Image (cartoon, rainbow, N blue to C red; front, side):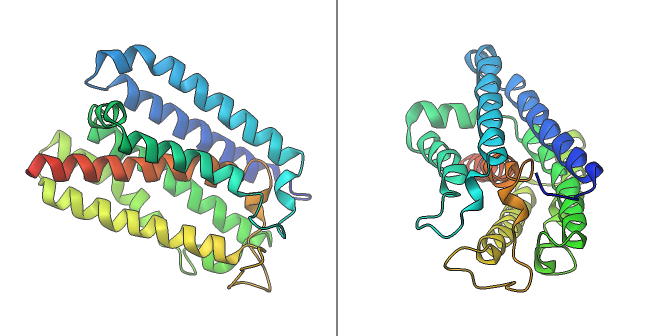
Length: 235
């Protein structure tokens, strides 16, 4: 863990990880597929095992060696990205994707608000650069703030059409990719491009390593699922 970091910052982030996990579980339980509902607990166990594995790896300092090529951090981000790719590439995976409820997926984006607040706190603790906060190049908090309004007025009140939900998903996906790219290029990898005076080092430590290893993939998956469903609905 990061030395001399105020405990409440780590606790808030751990609670955010738990909230993301629970919101994803609710999404699974509200699936239109009875088979998926019956397997939701097994899926959650798998995710918990992944979270524990990544936590142990980070606590042992595995990701602190940033000079290798490819970076060791690929073991945090490659498996979930590969899994998402498999789900979209296979028939059973697409069936799973299409059974997930858009409303729950949209509400899950609220976790982006505490994430951004934690990042802001980490900036003041000199563990990430300013450009990774909403005072810099990161406007991802806007997706988290607007998510509950989009979900409520789209699905509960039917005031927002699917075209606008699709546009919101594309914009929010763009905001996510923006911060991911800036975070990667701000980390002390051999290909670092930004923030040499204060690189992005927080994500190499527990519990913040779970941001790229778990929270970001969940949000990315949610946007890709939503976009697929919304585009197919219009056909």
